[in-house]
Length: 89
Image (cartoon, rainbow, N blue to C red; front, side, top):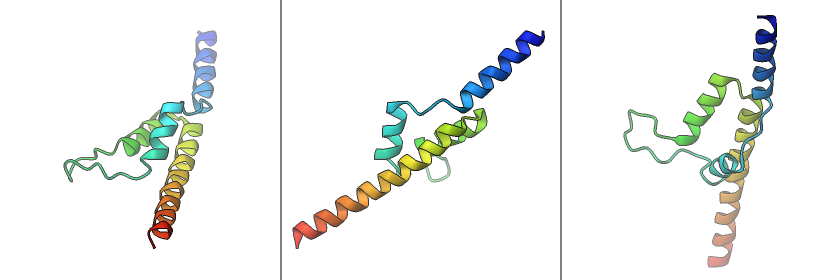
């Protein structure tokens, strides 16, 4: 019984430190904000639902990395807009 409890604690600790997969990181980078609202009363934003899932299961590292990827994605799109505005002039 004690060994089983220790195993559960080890698994919980491992979950906290699992990094984002490449696919998860790319989704947070390329879609940093939720604009895919099909029904305004229902949350259809994939990234928001993923962050809620990370919180629910205690994926602390994934939450931090997802927030960073969203910021980098926003910076990327703002940079592209500035470059395009400069080139169009």
